[in-house]
Length: 142
Length: 432
Image (cartoon, rainbow over all chains, first blue to last red; front, side):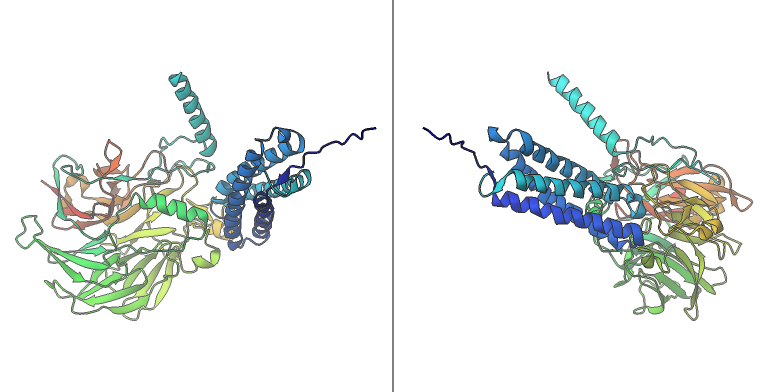
């Protein structure tokens, strides 16, 4: 009697992809925290920090997006959690870009929109990381 | 196919630009005089920008009214900003560019790069040049360096035999004898001036008619406090400096960037042109011409044009807002007034009573404003009526910018001296 063995294709996150994805979380989280600090202190230095932290998040987030999109080459990945992951990374990056433009406004002109966007982007980064790491094992491609 | 693609692109561009830039119209509301129309503040995701696109003058000249002529009397200067006509007719030119405020945000790098395309690439002269027309034929055949190794000199004033120069970090003094073409040596420091950061670095200067006091215009250290409140200590003010001792006090405050000061002839009244804040839309906030009243607070940063609160400033100060006074005369938003001087009868009947104002021109506006010298007519010692174009053509119909007028000085012999810090030229306008 033959035993039916279900072959599960283990697609895994490439280590570089994993590194880039992981890096977005602390950067966007720190953006949010610095914005909150400005909101409660009016100390202008707290708006300079998030401007740069957000740029850092966009840099790593942009490369993450590139890897995530390249992953769509594999037909097995074009569904379910992976697709949701790609869309989350895309939304994170687009909103993060708008947040950069908002943060370029002078002084309190960036508020409260800057803080609201930072909350959303940080949340998206966290959920994207969760999905990315749980739906795909770390290892090699994509 | 192609046209379909093009129109699709056009729609996309239109949609994007509508999204990015608040949909305001640039068309100018009535923004001259004592009661300018002030629209609601607006700012899209990107500030509206239109940076000057410089090109040489070639055979072209700035345009002056019928009955007047204009000639370049000095070229190849090193960023001329302000001029002073000496009693013997010689002209001193302050050349230099200061600033160098640290770039703190990603925006500072991008905006700094874009704006630098609209200015000269010549290095700061840090000197005073002297121009002389010995035979009075209107050609300034002699051009020499009067003093050098200064630090971004800007404001100039002569009191008796003392020549005062406002560097970006100190008010200094030279001895001056009529006819002198070269300073005797390095200057004496009268007082240090606020120079930390120097976001707005120009130090405007005027001497009281009796020569006892000097008035120094000190610009703010930011557009609207984005470098922090602490950076604004002793900024956006006019100082009154005792010419003998160098002791100073704040004469007036809340003047964002008082770029030129002058005394009204036959009075003790100080006047200033002031550059107001950016990024509130194409028609906010009007730059202005005002008499500077002792002890008055003109609003910056908490409010503009009197008591219109600027919500970008935190913490707010409603007591200061309540104390803010309105300036006398709006010149228009973003025109960037950098020069002011009272006229003389020798300038011709139409332009005898009033002030000339040099407007370097806008960046924070899709449809440019300024880029000309205007005449604001006075009656009974007060501004009366709309400004009249006096020198135009700095920005051509081709969209190219050939010059940017800054300091203006009336030569009592009947000439207007205009410094142009883009083409590094001194222009002289005379009635024919």
